[in-house]
Length: 175
Length: 138
Length: 122
Image 1 (cartoon, rainbow over the protein chains, first blue to last red):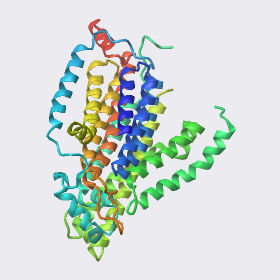
Image 2 (cartoon, chains in turn yellow, cyan, blue):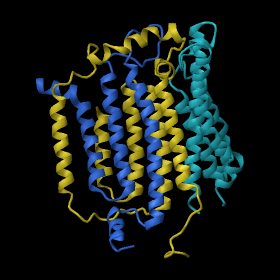
Image 3 (cartoon, rainbow over the protein chains, first blue to last red):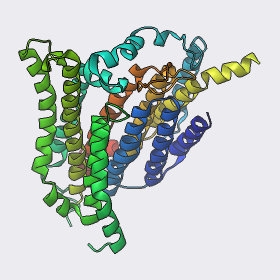
Image 4 (cartoon, rainbow over the protein chains, first blue to last red):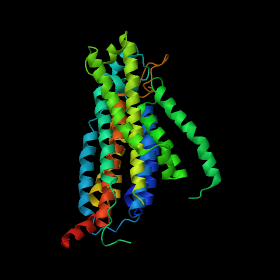
């Protein structure tokens, strides 16, 4: 709960900060906090991924982009009232929605009733793999993971296509 | 490019251990937390560390871009190939039970191969991202 | 007393909503493209939290089967979010690549300046 509150504080920092370098560093902090929260929620695999991907790779990429572009963010020209109104409205609707949700962490919640017990009971017998996350990821939901690998493959080649060609500089700022 | 001596030596010492940890995460993923995605990112982090300390050109000499780009396709191909193989052996697509004599062992083998495919694709993609973004700067 | 229980049992969801809305606000209100992408990833991270919080069982342990443990958290959200994180990074990278190209074409990554550039009849 303390971690979650810290995360909210970091988020406010991200919203307010105008220096993009600070924003990127704050989002790295945010990712590490998120990874800690995931460990508390027993999602060790996900926490590992978030720490390496969210805090590591995406920070490297964003810093690379900041090196190529500008670091300061311009002062916005319009007032933020309309987006603020949209955001607060959405939040209100969602908050109203949480009232009917089941309590946190109870074992009899409906999400635990269907597929998960079968995975937990059968994983050893069917795949000899004790880490259920791995067996579900690779075996029971192999299609998901295949599709997801193809998404990464596509993204890799999209970035290559966008960025690898020879750099054409603007005629105005030839130096 | 002249960098701190300590930084160079320390990172040089660290590099093999990072790779070792990536492989540990990969092959111990059946028994503890870990798997292809994490291992791929950690392995890519090793190449990125090398590129940051010793310069992009040195990294590109050690791990040529063409190899990395082949890895992206190879991983996805390995994953789909496991699926097709299991089809040819008489099961459904991605049903690993037919890969070995006992269904459970087939499943285990299939999971290992599939995770290997994920590892190759993820590592290749991450290194490619870094190479292209970093190579754009000059 | 009931109010305190309400807070404890829904705190995760409220934080999730706050993060989601903050991401939405950044995406809508800010013109800087890198900032917009950070906002998008904030939104995305809130979805991880949204999925993972119901999967937790109090007193349970991580879903790695071992002798001596009976209660495990739900592994299904973990699997879904594991793939979502990596896909999130992939889409973020494509977005950043687009930002770099836009910066090369227009010399800026501010939305307003790009629109102004377009109205000049370039």
